[in-house]
Amino acid sequence: MSWNRKILVGFFVLSSVVAWKVRAEIPRVQCADTANGAQCVVMFSKPIASSIQVQSQKNTLSLTVHQENPEDPPLAFFRPVKICSVLQGYEIHRRPETILLRFNTTVPLRVTNLSLTPYEGKFLLRFALVPATTPTPVSQPLCAAAALSTSKKPLHLIAIDPGHGGIDPGARGVNGEKEKNITLEMARILQEMLQKKGYKVVLTRAKDITLRRIDRLKKIESAKADLFISVHADHNPEKSMHGASIYTLAPEASDPESARLAQRENVADQHIDGMEVSSPEVAHILDDLSKRVVLQQAKQFARLLERTLDEEDRLPFKPRRSADFLILLSATVPSVLIELGYLSNADDCKRLTSKVFLHKIAGKIVKAIEQYFVEASL
Ligand SMILES: [Zn+2]
Image 1: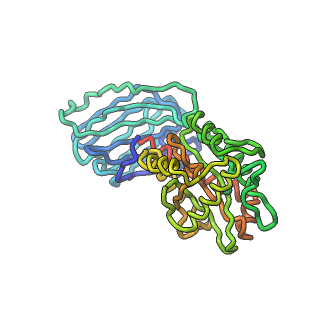
Image 2: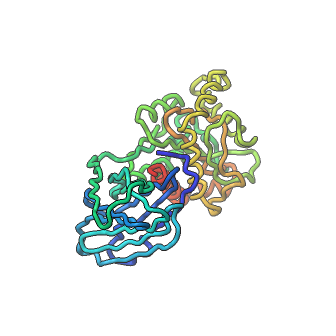
Image 3: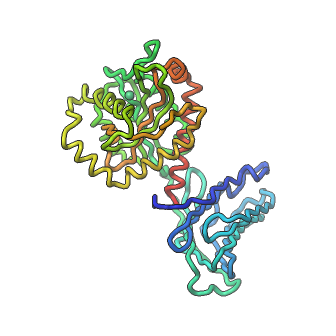
């Protein structure tokens, strides 16, 4: 897994192009530049054989994948545009027993690190492209047995933390609504949506109970979650403040509003934990954590989330913020806190108490989660 890709080119959803009654076998092709070539991921919606033939000839690279879906009609798809530095485009030919992927390359390339893994009921074919230092004989197939994992275990575990609970109601809405109920409702919706997509989900609390922050963190770390999302709803004396915000951990707040919010959320924890929030120990943890890769991963997810939550969701001018939220202190799990909106704002409050709205936002969060793990696989 690498987060240092400078360029991510070629995110093509082909399913809309393929107007067959049956689903497309190749819904997605992704390529990213590497130091000396490219890393590619091709997602198949149906099982394919782990024996894949690879042929290279000058500036053409072909992968023949065996499949058994004779009921699918033949298909030819051409994408003649540059998709990364070394790939000028590709074409796909679906035949009764095989799918041919043909890439046009800027220089002769060869395939390395071929692997095939299940992914949410689909199959991911990953491979790296490197310069062909020794020419591959023309038309002589190279049989590459991709390693196929048959594990039925869900690939990713998402931890959802409904903020507050029990004796801690959190923020209050304009008509007395309680933040702790809204966050729990949102967590349940997210859990249902994610489980339908094959993810494993752990909630820090599944009912209205008082929970210490330290216990929330212990739960997500012992579960070995791949991603942690803490869900909250904000309050501000300034009634016009509105919109969702996405937070990652930082020793210094990105802006005064974030500092105020982190202090408010941390104080709520302090009531339960009895913990001194500004202790030098916490500052040390923050300093150490900022160097860790999990924070970069959290920021990556926050970026994707910002993209999926569009203007329609009334994102403020700075939707992606950072501050020293203690709930985000996990050193092993990428952690993001979402403020769904302001309960002190009449419009936001109305939306946050609507199941339709919560489902809509949850759908966008799930979309960002899916994108996050696809990018992480590159
Ligand atoms: Zn809160």
